Length: 500
Image 1 (tube, rainbow, N blue to C red):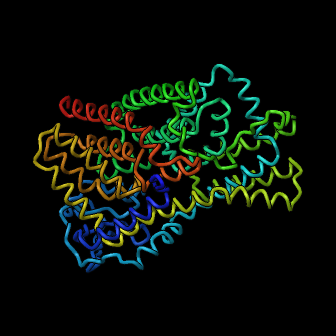
Image 2: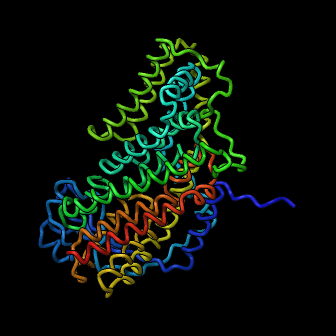
Image 3: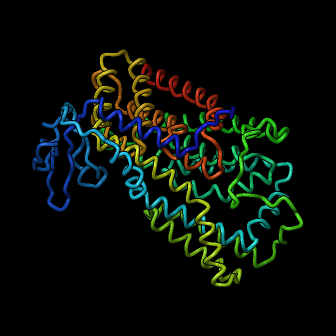
């Protein structure tokens, strides 16, 4: 009898999709009325399933709707997505998702995430080209020699730098671009793929969990809650340092064990086979010498990632600009390495193909959110969650809000989407309990970030798929850190509400 194997990421997501579709047959459909601002016509629109109402753009309109948000937040573009109107939840006619909708969801998900998918495929092509040039292997060998005996610097530097990007400008999906480069470097340092993936993914996730000036979580959530985003900033900075110290210690401890004894790796005995793009040559004799030409190639390669970071953080770039940067970088490297045109196309397409499976996972994950949205059960879950936490004491209330946001992250993948959907409903609850609205912001960002570390509909499964790490192996690795970070968040929230 064959032993049972944990399902692949694709199968896990298809099972969750089926559960979401089934839920739309049993969970009552419901919706909040949504308020949006039409800048061109300078008017508010209140949208329900039955009608669309046009209202004047005044502070009085917002007050009458129970939305305690300054009018300027709409006119300045700070709030650019439709927001839920408090106390307007109504059950609506159900739209259960059947077999046909279930089959369509992954396709719709891939269409919605096409920008991420194309970025990933082009990065795969770029990695294929630079691998063919020999520059990557030569660079890894040189770096391994420089860091000999000080390999832990890789972990600290990678986690902290990615974390700073996460806490400041929301570095998240973009970090997937770093993995094909960093995994071989970590392997050459005699760590396993878990250390490499965790250093990048946890850096981004914990950075987002302890967001300080992240526009996609803190700023948009604060604007939607009607408070200044700097309120509560000092506490979040403190949490950043605490949580990152704990995370880096956790990673260093695991990395030390794996380096001393590879059998301590969570991948030991799992049959983990790395993507060919990520493998370090076993024979050192086959690694080329780091010539001047190869150094120039590595400079161009590194410049692509530096330009991406500057573009995203300073120039309002998004996936189209990032993908174009990597495409141009691949072509430049092809010219510098003097790769024949036919061979260039061949290695680029082969490299892109190696990451096609990861792209499918991204589409499958987004399809789950689409099923729940089309089945109109997301607002129902939010309504009952907000009802559950009312009439509680301060400590119990804020920790319940924290747990609610952990749960909502399992249904809503986008941090900005979660903020816009929930803040107009959740933020006023703080007033009734007698605490500042910034505490709701903190509970939201902590809960959203913490659960995002394991949420199947987020970026964890695509990230793991790049290194062919099973989800079960990740859960075994991460659960102690998850509990520690959860306890830290709950203690911080509890102490904060009683110090106000």
